[in-house]
Length: 427
Image 1: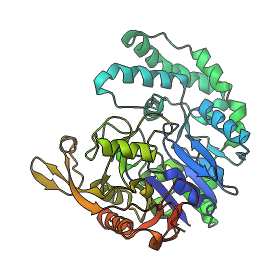
Image 2: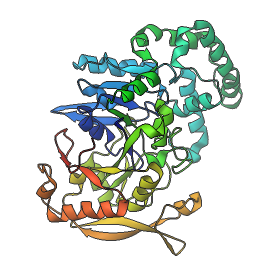
Image 3: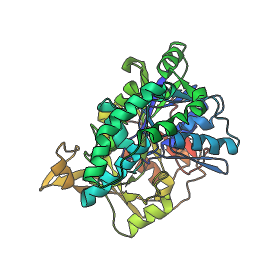
């Protein structure tokens, strides 16, 4: 039962798409198990660049079946638009499978997301405004709309009515917005039913049967560990579980079927949205990382906040995910620095702290304790093996590996599909 989980070990945007795509040719299924179109992956194939928001990266690998699991929240218009865009570029999307139990992002979820975030003002979370949080809230409050509801108009209407009873009160009386008509929402959602029907199935059954047949299944998380609703920098987090445990609930497979958990680490650190970020840079180095690394959100279009590598966060990700391996990305971006700082601990109220503080207050006050590592100036984008890297680059990788608590089994040295050094096979 070769089941692998691949997830972000920082705040997301670590390059999971590249890692998933690298494995895509060797796996039978690639599964998104949480999040929605608030996640974004950029995959470069030859001279073609693909920006994926909701679809699993495996959609670009011939022979691989891409799956959207029950733990994902789906905006039908975004999904269909993304499928159409890939079809126009000659990508076969016919093998996509969509869980009938996945929840749908409705128009009113998007409205609620935008108005509540605006209402928070300076206390805003930094959401993408795409309705993700409100959809997960509806799911937990048991007033959510699922994909399977599109195929029973009576049930769909009842559920939309129940959801809008409270939401229209909030929109009109608290936010001074116009009420949303039930008929309008039902009509729009029913319009997606026939277009989605070829993809809808019982993905839990499909995946478990695949694993019983010794198929290779890769579970792909969106966002990153520090954005997990339970284990992230709450409340500046997403509304689901990108950590490894989320793969079990979000795809319907038991934990005993997971054989390997791979964490994606950027060779430095970035973050999108509000919240604490101990190693964040506000100087020329931060701007250089942003410019050289092309640090702009695939989904949001927002500039990413940039900082040096944080080993405290990496150790935390290893612990809460049970990581067996790391995939280190964007090592090439660090070329040209004479010395590279790495955060090895925090200073909090005069105390040295080497593990992530559980207290939100402490984390907000954490100051990075840096260790300086020698940099390199040689171009590494053509490196095909670890020994091809400059000695200082090798030492940097080895230091990060030792500090993070799991072996680095692959290294990204450029954006292209073939610009990766494999040290140990993930399969």
